[in-house]
Amino acid sequence: MTVKVEGRGIEILEGKNFCNVSTLREDGSVHCVPVWVDIEDGQPVLNSAEGRAWPTNLQRDPRVTLTVPNMENPYEYLEVRGRVAERTHDGADEHIDRLAKKYLDKDEYPYRQPGEQRVIIRVEPEIAKVRGG
Image (cartoon, rainbow, N blue to C red):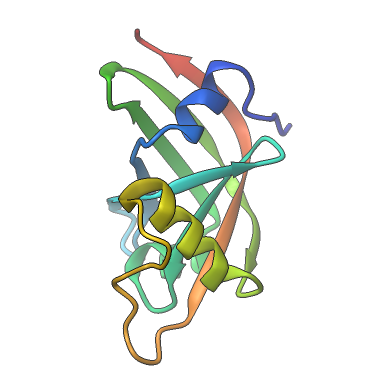
């Protein structure tokens, strides 16, 4: 059963809060990295470059857990458990620029690498809960 992120969870995702993305490596161990996050239509939206570990892990196993602490009160956080709903290159360069504006107040993502292909990953939540506070 899928759910949408609502209420306070949306506020946390819209804030300048980092998202810890937890995926499974091929050997079954957990891989966790901090990334920027966005929200569209109740779904968390992530952006990365092809070839990085966590997007590669999600190609093999679409299950993912996101933890987004409120930077103003890190005891309050949004937990999302779900699966990849969509993976696309369409609009990924523009999306990373929007995230750069949100997190760095820069109009363009300043860390682009030559030949890098950006990818958007939308997560379909099965559980979305704000915890702590």
